[in-house]
Amino acid sequence: MDLINLAGEKLGVFLIVFARVSGIFSMAPFFGSKNIPARIKIGFSLFVALILAPVIIAQYPALAAPQALLPYVGLIFVEFFLGLLIGFVSYLIFAAIQMAGALVDAQTGFSIVSVLDPQSGTQVPLLGTFKYMLAILLFLGINGHHVILAALSESFQRMPIGTGLDQAAVLSQVVNMFTSAFTFAFKIALPVLVSLFLLDVVFGIMARTVPQMNVFMVGLPAKIVVGFFILALALPVFLAVVQIGFTGMYTDLYLLLEMLPAQ
Image (cartoon, rainbow, N blue to C red; front, side, top):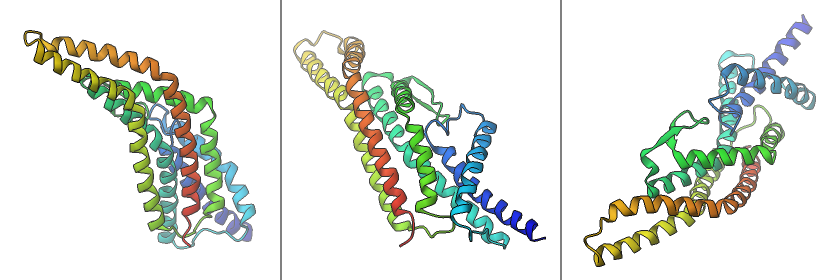
């Protein structure tokens, strides 16, 4: 009977670990893509939880799941939310990249064209998807997904199961990350935005000096050509800036893990 009770307690701990793991893989870049079937996500989450659970149980032998149903369900939801929070923070950089693409699309006239985003399953601008796919390839190429897995493992060290959450500190950190994401998006889009703004100024001057010229018919193709030209020139810089953004994302992720536990 003692063995059965022990097995039941450890199974409860395993389900709590599984809740945090599944939360991260529901939102994290690449892992949370809508193109990955739900069965594969669940299976991979179970696999990772099976690896992490014995290590966590060995580190915290006294760890046990709550016996009452409501506290146990509440702890499951807290752990799932914690996983979503970590995954969301890691996804912010990609949301900023898509935002930069949306800004460029709005200036070049591509905002009327939208394609399906494989991460969120929603319609996003054309250049936003292009930049997003480049960022995902770079993310996988520099083993960024390994950092997500390492942060998942580290989260159980920084915030063991059942630890209180410092809500004020976490909220403040997330707001700062939002601000950094918006700033990062404008930095990426700035070369094209400045170039197209100068082009608009030139066409505005031409419209005043040559009134008979149809500025709209000439300006729209010209903005597309100039936009693509600047994008091609700035592509190496874009990749370098994205790598810097990933470094900042890793720093923010581990800074968040340090601020999670209630002091």
